[in-house]
Length: 272
Image (cartoon, rainbow, N blue to C red; front, top):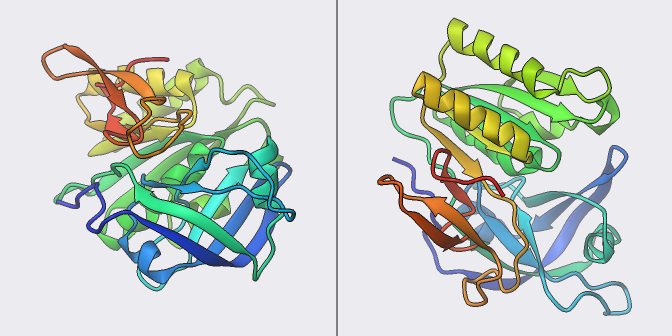
């Protein structure tokens, strides 16, 4: 079984930016020269990035950023929504600039031996979190079926999501009603009836998470979710990112998303 945690100690590193470019209307990608950190990173983990502008100013706290690209002989990549002071500073970086980061952090996704197909349900920047899972699955001979949700086609990052994995993608949009919960439920039920996946994965939407959680329980399909949460330290010391998680016996615990997560069992996670 592939472990979800890092195999090496967490490191603080200042890495050189290899590429910095906008993606669509509101997203941005960064590729960093950090081969050792990229090789030890796992899909579902994250880094804590220091967001400083050209004058060395910026938010005091680092920003947690899920890994978009990682692996041996690959740059370390991040794909994010530019919406505040911190992400604007990250988007202003250019090739040759330096970026301080701490990681890899948290628990990643797990792919079990013997799985032959998985289904991914993602929306918004949840696509970035789940993107490395597609290539990890493909490397193990696991077929990937993905349903990607966005406001409209201009916001869809299907190429950035699939990479070289060959994932089969269906896009659903707010603009035509295809992303509404009843429409997505009908689509998933059809998929489950035709080719039941061995596991399901989700990130990026609370309403789609609740839908997938309900259907996975009904069809008895295991699943995992990457939770999105505000973080302070990213190391488990500040308890800023605590969420309620249910044990197998039904007991609810308050766990840290940065340390015990961000990936949790789909049925254990509770709505926010």
